[in-house]
Length: 579
Image (cartoon, rainbow, N blue to C red; front, side):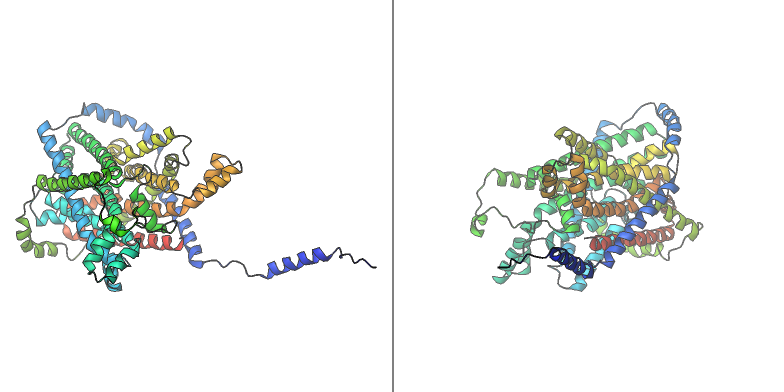
């Protein structure tokens, strides 16, 4: 009997065949749009580095200029404050007009968001129109809106309320629409199948699901508007900002810095109150912000596939309709009534002259004609264009500095990255403190140290951006899936290896989206910092407004709109391509 043994070269031949098949197999097809987005991102980083070099931030020069600050504060002597009654009245007025403006924006954003959401819009034309309204109002600086409304209405809080309200529509309506697109369609379709109207679909099928995200968005926007209200005082809007501008213009620096300190405390207090409301009213856990989750969904889609509102916590619809009045429902009801009382109080303390809504129509043609045709006056196009380029450079340089600092601070503020809870809490508190400092006030202090120019504006924007971007990064890193992190930890990886091997790769897409959001914000903010001498086109914008050269104002606004729309378009394309 002959025993047949396998040939020794049989296995190598099989291996050779597999290698030959692998070599002939088509490679993974690369997405050209994704590659183009990656190249564009690299070019943008290089441009930001060039902009940072052109700004020429000199740390040794700032140290040498520290003596300027010492002499300045020695000349100031000490902080001064308005009389207690006046200070209380100004504080209440500022809070009232900011709250009223934010609520106005929230109300106006509902129909815009309904038309802009893909699953509720009547048609593509309506959706395009609503999206354009959101982008346009977001790109139009609130200080320019305030200038226009000061011309149309009497001096007071109404111009500020309308400026804050219209400008805030852009951000709030976008996030409102993104939340509508993420709903569970089941309740809405059930109402439609039962013969319900469009209003019933919205009020019973959509609104209950999106309300938590909407409340969080409005609270966050109110915090932003509180810090932004400072600059509105420079164009005649009543409140703490106006008193601070009067103090600095009259060289009463002690009073100006005293009011600036009050504004800082007010911003921090508003941030803390908003956080408490989110936790108490929405049941939000620390570090899991509804607003941040909404941004993540808008940019990268919802992880896990479950739609918001899909988990009702009730066995049936009938059970949900007959909820018992437990502690959670009582607390929610009390919070809703308190919120309504705060809104009514805000309108009352604002002292709105309702008669202006009847008389301002006669002024509209003359005011509109004063802005047309746009021209560049005695400055010329080259001067204004150069200033606009400087504004973009300030925004890019500040975004780069903010990104480098926020990655470190935001990571240490994340629960899954920080070495211990004390570290996380400390950096979270640091981010809250930074967010409480209005960029305009910081720019004024830096101008004293470094002098007029782009350096002060860039540092002010970079510092202020850390509070926003650091929080977004921290929340995004906390929300990454834990599986890859646990897998690396199980293999003996260090905390640093886990961070770079699992946490950062999963949060990279959110980081890119948040950075573009900051860049979009910085372009508008850099314009406003020029008002106090922080470099850029804001200086010419303020001078033109105060000199009633509204044709130049119109020209500058058109340039700002073009730049902001370009940044918005680039950001939308990048997020879509890198998704």
